[in-house]
Every structure is written in C-alpha cells, then in structure tokens.
Amino acid sequence: MANLHPLIYALSTALDCVGMDDVHHGKRVAYMALETARELGYPDDDLIDLFHLSLLHDCGVPSSRIDGTLVSTFDWEGAEAHCIRGYQLLNAIPKLKHLSDMVLYHHTHFEVLAQLDIDTRTVKLANLIFLTDRIDALIAQHIEEKEESIITVAEQIKREVRALSLIFFNPEQVDAFLKVSAKESFWFTLDAGNLQGYFEAYLQEIGAMEISLGSVADIVRLFAVFVDARSHHTADHLHDVAGLSNYIAQRAGLDAETCEKIRIAGLLHDLGKLKIPDELIDRETPLSENELNIIKRHPYETYQILSNINGLEDIANWAAQHHENLKGTGYPYYKDDISLPVMILAVADIFQALAQDRPYRNGMNPNQILEILKQKVVRGELDRSIVNIVEENLQKCWEVSMINSSHD
Image (cartoon, rainbow, N blue to C red; front, side, top):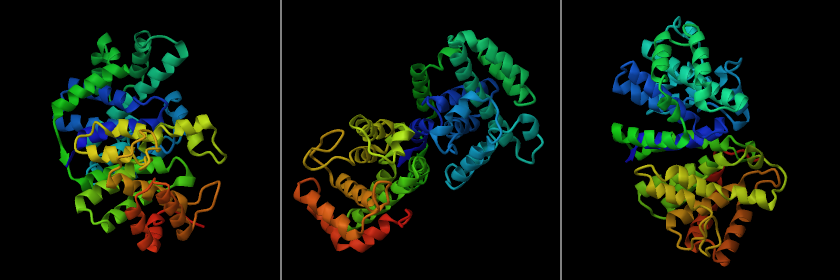
C-alpha cells in the first residue's frame, strides 16, 4: 500500500520539469488555490481535489519546449491542446478520473465556462485553477520584466486580475484571492523553501489516503509517458523495460508483490531524466564528456523525486540503482552489493535499450543482445543467473521488450 497524497506531490516535481523551467509551478498554483478555497469555505473534499488538481493540471504538456508559452503568454490560441491531452491521460486512471473534466476546462474563460452544460463543482474548481495558474504566469512575467521583488509587483498583478473578473475568472474567487493576498506573508510563502514547509504541514493535516500497488502502477504510468515523450528515439522505453523486468522476475520465481514492485520501478527508473535538458535527451550526435556527466545525474534525481513517498521505499531504491553493477563501477553510487530486483531491472534496461532503434544504430537482434549480456557477466558486472533466464527465454524476452516500441 502507498499514500496517494505524497505520491502525487512527489511526482508533480517531475511534471513541473516538463512544462516549466521552474520546478515549483504546480506547488505555487496549489498553495494559492488552497488559500483562496479556504477563504471561500470550500469543504475538505474540494481542498483535496484542488491539491491534486493543481499538481497535475499541466500533465498534458508534451515537452519543456513549450514552457515559454506557458509563462510568457497570459492567454493564447491553442492552449486547449494540453488541456485535452491532460483530460485523456487522467480519464484513463481510475483513481484520478474524477479530475479529468477539471483539467479539460482549466484554460476556459469563466464567461464561457458558466454557459456550458457541466456540473457546478467542475466549473468552480477548474476556474480556480485557471485563476491561480495565470497568477503564477503573471508573477513570472512581471518579476522577469521589472527585475523587482514579488511584493513590488504584487499590486500590479492584483490590478490585472481584478480587471479580468467575470470575463476570465469567477468574481467570488477573485475577491477571495484579493483578500488572502493582501498580506505580505501570502507572497513570501511562494518562495521555494517556504512552500516546502507549507506542504509538509498540509500533508500531515490531511493524513493518508492508502492505495494499492495496482493503483500506484496506474498513476506512475502517467509519468512514464512524460519521460518516454522526451524523445521519439526512446519512446515507450519505460513501459517495455517495466514489462521485461516483470517477466524476468516471474521467471526468477519471485513473489507476485515483488514482481509488481519491480514493474513499477521499471516504469519510474528514468524519471530523473525529466530534469535533464531536452537537447541532450534528443541528441542525435555523440555527447561530450561533460554532457554525459549531466546525463549521469538522472538515477540520483529519480531517487530524490521518489524517496519521500511512504510505501515506495523499495521501488525508489531499485529505480535509482539501475545503472549500478556487481563490480561497483556503475553510477551514481558505485554500489557492488546489488539486490536481485536491481539486477533484474539493470538487465532489462540494457536488453531493451539494445533492442530499440537509436539514432546512432539500428536495434540489435536477440542473439546480439545476449552476447553483450554474456560479456558483461564475464566482466563481473551482471549476475549470471539472471542472464541465464534471459538466454533460456530469449525470443520471449525480445518480444516482451518490444511490445510498445517500434522496430524497423
């Protein structure tokens, strides 16, 4: 079992890396939405949904390449594209499906939203996210433009928001925001360190919402989509590594719960790549030594994102160690006491990467991949028993590793 609240909170850090240069956008939106909703007396169920919704509202953003539009343009043609994609992604996840309509409408003007045939709660929560999302964009624009402190630009931001009441935003929510933001402390809390303290207290306040490993898998598949979308060269890598890891774990005789945890670790193992610049992930030419060193941060960043999620401690450790080996020459920890789940994940990662087409080579056939794995066994890097499982089930391993990936 795992706690849904810290799971979404932690993974939202990775999501903000996709849509923004600043990894606290979703958290700032959540803080402003929660404070505004509290002023309005919204019930606890609304507050919890606002918390999740704020952190996930930009899940339809396909790449950090569009971050300039998100923060530099207040309202733009085509904004609905990421709303539609976000709706589709969340609608496929049972535990988050109830948020999908709110994501769909979170860039819809209030004067339009009020005329649509949708329930009042969706209107209320979607428009509050629109309000606080656009306030965060205004903050970024004004601070960058004027090079002044947030308090200095706060009055200008409030004037602009007030002018858009009833047209863009729900007037009641605008009035509530103006009231809670009258205090300088409101704006100071938007600093990264203060936000962390605010949400540590909030997570304690709302307690646990336990979900099964199956529900965890449903949710983390959403974040695997973000990683795989970074480059068409590695599309579906995480999903196929997860499938192959699970298959090898079953053949190794591990229990069902451990197999499921390994599958989830496979879905998350490259999560830290969301903190790596797009131009390095999608590079078709060789990387410099410095660029390779930047890439090597990703397992460490994966652990930083996952380490505070109660119930996922094993998964966090396994995912973060997928580039370690038995010789202690892997990265970033140089560990040589590799657990069986980590070794399974490492073998699956290597196998799938070699099977998949890359810009610098075609995907390899099963026998070529097996030869490379055996060489790594001889060098003392991989566990012989795991590679033997691959050899005994070679064709099936290749098929599982390419279920989602294209191979020409």
